Image (cartoon, rainbow, N blue to C red; front, side):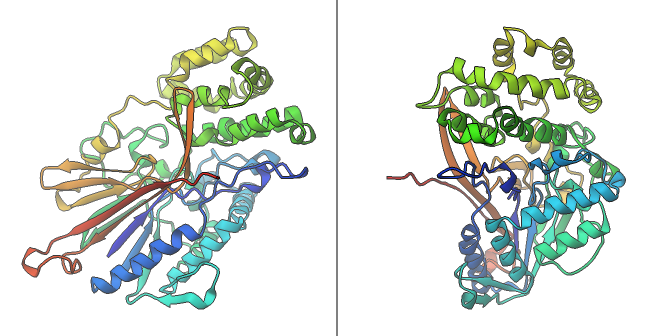
Length: 449
C-alpha cells in the first residue's frame, strides 16, 4: 500500500510577526498538526482492512519551504545557489532556516507525528501521547526534495538533519528525485521537472521524457527561487522597513496592507496578484493602497532590476519585454501602476504544454499505471496513456487565497492519494483484483460567528 503527500510547505513564520500592541500582527500559514491525525488513523485502518504487508508513505517534495523566510536577508548567502556550491556559511544558514521551521509550534508537533510513523505508529489524539497506536504492518517513509526544498539535498550534514526531523533511518546519502514502485506500478516525482520556471533546465518538449535527469540539473537554482525570495518574501519585509513596526501596530490600514503582502504568494490565480493587493474589502481605496505600496515597490525593483541572475533567466525564458521594462525603471514614473495592471495577467503564466502532457511522455509509461506528482497546487486526476493510465496531482495542504473580480476567499486544502497493489484491495472480489487507488482532495473553511 502506497500513500503520496506533497507540498506541505512548512515555513518559518516567526520573523514575519510584528510583536507588541494588544495583538501581534502576522499570519498562521503552517498546516495544523491535527490535520494529519485523521489521515494517519485512516491509513492505519486501511492497512488492516486490506491486509497490507507494508505501508510506503512518500513525502513528494516541498515539505519544507526554504525560501519563504526573511532569515535570508540577515546575511550574504542567498538560496539561489547550486547545491554543489553550498559552502560553510550557506550551509549554516540552511540549517538555521531548517531548525527555525522545525521549531514552529504546529510544524514541531507534526514532525513528532512523522517520527512516530518511522516507528510504525500513529496517534489518535495529537495532544495525548497515551493515544499512540501501532500500524498492523511496517511503515516506510520516503522523501523527495522539490524546488522549494532543493537545498536540503546539498550536504551530508543537512541530509542527516532532514532524516532526523522526518523520522527516517539515519544516513547521509542523497535523496532520490524519483521513486518507482513495481507493485503497484507507480512512478512518484515532485513534478517541478515538468515546469521550466521552477527547474534549471527546460524538459517540457522532451518526448520521451527522460527517466534519469543529470543530478546537476536538480542541484542548480531556478527562476522561481529568485522570485520567491526577492519578490514574494521581500515585499512584506521591505514594507516593515519603510513604515516601521510601531507605526504599523498603530495604524489599521497599514496592518491590512501588510497582511495582504504576507498572503501574496498564496494567491490563485497568480494573475490576480495586483488586484488582490489593491482591493481590500472594507478597507482603503485603490489609490490609497498604491500610495502606501509605491515606495516599497520602488525599493524592491531598484534592488532587483539589474540583478545578473534575473537578467539571465529572463533572457533564457524569452521574456525580453520584461527585461526591457526593468531597464526603463518605469516604476519611477506616474504611469507605473497602469503598467503593472497591464502586465498583471501575464504573472505566473506559462506557454508550455503543462504537467499532464509532459507526464504523458514519461519514458517508462508503458510499465506504469500511475505517474504521481505535486508541485502545481492544483489537485487533479487525468488520463495520460492508452492503457487506462493516469497522472495524479497531489495538490497541496496549504492555505490558499482565491480571487475573482475583486472578490477574495480563503480556504484550507488537503490532498493525498493511496494506491493498492492487486493483492490488497479487499473491496473487490478475487477474480477482479487489480491495482486500485483512492484520491482524496478537499477544501475547508470556518467563518467566525
